[in-house]
Structure formats: structure tokens, C-alpha cells
Image (cartoon, rainbow, N blue to C red; front, side, top):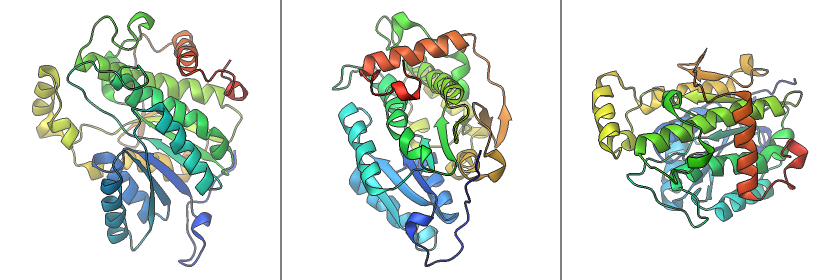
Length: 304
């Protein structure tokens, strides 16, 4: 595979000569610190955020912390497939290519709710909309010398379940069950995508950022998550440290041909789950395309 250069050689180079990174959920926590760190490395950072005002605040913070580096933003709520498609369309109109896509956004919800599209919200925001966004931006990633996809998973993927009869918590819902399943789906999607992209100049890897002290962690709903959060506080890390693995996967030249792997603390590690099989990965891929009605549009990328 060709290797992209992540070095900006002079301050007056065109922005479009810089590696371009799109990050979802980048207005707080790990996502924000990932954006800052990549801007400091010379990336043109594009923030995908549901709150435009919050994105503007973060863009100013990036400029202050990254030597005046400019950050763009696109407003989109991943709880809406319409807005997710518009996000991809807007990005493609503004930029000639995409070098790094970081699917970072995620939610914890105290009860089962449905989006305007009729999907369970945790399932759609944490997984399905990222699946769709990635598919829609594969063409832009292919235009990069070496495109990279970084998917935020979690160590709780180890206890997630893949059950086609309860994919969206239709039969039973729990905060831990819905969240861990969504993170398992991100891991399964990463590995299946890496298999389908084999031979292309695009890599896909998953990351566990660690137990990070974020607003989402400290306000996690549900008795199980609150207990886990407070018990984990002595071992938790800052968002800055939590961002390191995503930054490493996005920028390290040593990883230009590594794909389908799971990383934590900037190291390749193993995460085992009995549901994470080749058969189930292919089944999840097919179910996702079918539910989105995107089978024909994505056939070129192995969608059928």
C-alpha cells in the first residue's frame, strides 16, 4: 500500500495539501482531544457535531492550542440518517479526499428510545449511522494515498451479544446490554470492512480508548454503569490520554498496512467474543445494508 505523508512542510502550504481528518462526536471528551492533537500534527480537522455552537467553540480552542490551526465543522445529528447522508454529501463537496475517518461519537441512554428513522437510538448513533457514513465516504477515502478508518469500540464489546432477533433491543433493553452490543457491532464491522477492503489502500482498525473521565462516563445512566464508573474512577485516565490511541492509529507511519486490528494503549491487543465470528460479521453487514436500503448503492464495495 502507498504511504501517506503526515508532515506539513511549510506554514503557507494550501490547506488541501494537509492530511484531512473527519471526526464524529468531537465537541467534548476523547473526540475533542483527538481533534486538538491531530491539528497540532498538521491535520486539517473537520468536526462532525450535532451542535454547531459547541463545534465553533471547539474550533476556537483548537486554534488556540494548535498554533492557529483552522478547524472546519459540519452540523449533523447521527440520530438522523438524513443528516448522516447530508454530512457525507457536504464533506464531499468541500474536500477533494478524506485521509482519516474517526467514528468516535457515542451515547448512553437510560431507556429504549427510537430515532426518527425507527431505529433504537443507541444502535443507530453508536453503530448504524457510522456504518452508513463510512460506506458513503469510502470513495473519498480511496482518493487518499492511504485512507484510514478508526472506529471507537470498547472493552465492553467482550460482553456484547449479537442476536438478530434482538438487534435493536426489541425484546429486552438494558443500558449495559445496548451499549456493549453497539461496541461489539463496531468491532465486527471493523473486521468485516478490513476483509472487504483487502487490496485497497484503505485500512480499518478499532480502538478502546481506556476508562476515560468524561462527562458521559460520570453521568452514565443505569445502576450497573454508575457503579462501574465510580469503581473505575481511581483507574481512569484523562481525555487527553484517552485520545492517544486514536491519534496513533490516525497518524503513525508504522501502521500504514495494518488493518482489522483492535488497539488499546497504542498497542495491538486481542478482544475475544464468541459472537465475533466470520459468519456473524457477514450477517451483521447484510442486515445493516438491508435495514438502510443501501444494498444496490454499495454493491461496488462488497455490499451484496
